[in-house]
Image 1 (cartoon, rainbow, N blue to C red):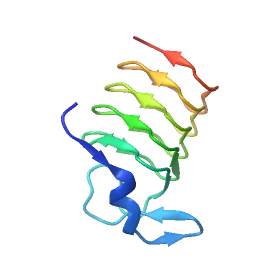
Image 2 (image 1 turned 90 degrees about the horizontal axis):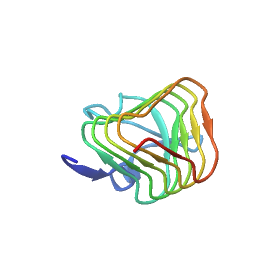
Image 3 (image 1 turned 45 degrees about the vertical axis):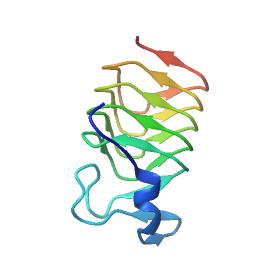
Image 4 (image 1 turned 120 degrees about the horizontal axis):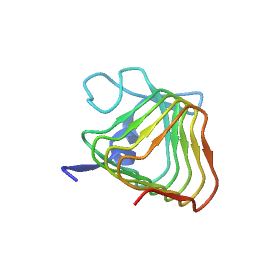
Length: 118
């Protein structure tokens, strides 16, 4: 991992509208105006990117160059390896683990404690 940031702490001061935090301009990992909901202690590699309307549960961790599509939802304790790609509207249950280079298409749903990849 190149550089993990705690996005829960970064987003703590962002404006909130209807329960969604609104991303400001100037961030490489999320587009200006995108809406997200974050649990505590969510870690993200600075090369990764979140889509609009994403929800991340407590203690989620995304590795290098991960990309989440719009409306993705990750449960508590999810861990994504490097270079993972999730299409729009993917849902991962609590404690899911995706190995490096996993790719999930749009609307994939994985239950709690699923493990894919290495």
